[in-house]
Length: 337
Image: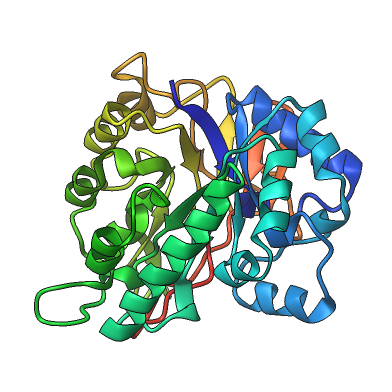
């Protein structure tokens, strides 16, 4: 069965010290998760300017980079399913990246393109495929496998027949490059996520699970519905079909990553919608954690007031507040995981 994991981005700024990190990871473990996906810039100290930029982008990283992550994952018995990095770091020193991945016991290094490349330019995409192949081949010699993580920017057309993702699929060598598929971002971009998952087939090694629906925003006089990341089972994505496809190709891990503005995971209760989505098949990997909307009013019951976005354990509740990334616009893809 796939490992049940959480993307480190979701833990935000509640990893500010060792004790807080231990409590957060222990609560995550108690909620039924047995893995974590680490991000390179969240496990190393980063400069003040980078902190400001990540905060401005809606993804505050806190002080977790100052902690001993080898010790934390070992003490909480969490499996590191992959390590996120960037293509530039791989090209500069693939050996160092590979050694760090090995030190955490993972075989996967994942990169994202996001705003770094012009996904509407065909020549750029051909060049990116070549760079991925070269980086993947180098990592392969180190015993590590390279995966590419999508957002919605890869859906941009590079010509009348092809999208950027077509080129990445067709021109990367499966021996050196495979994929971590994020079904939310392709759904957000208007694509058929299931069809793309089927096209990827066994090249999809990891799956980022999320749900997409609508929230009411604006004033009470002129409320509008805005599409957004939702708690699993409360949105409109066909999670049953996506899950079936992921299991059919034996993905190594299913990783929860939401850009929802806030969640509460009660360990003893679950909404029927989530249970229906995640429990129809006893083999589904998310059978022990249930996602309900996090109340935002200060007088709401069971609410834990948090000055920052992040995650913390309080009694029977594991409160996870995500990043609320803005949707990508005009060809830009937000710097999320």
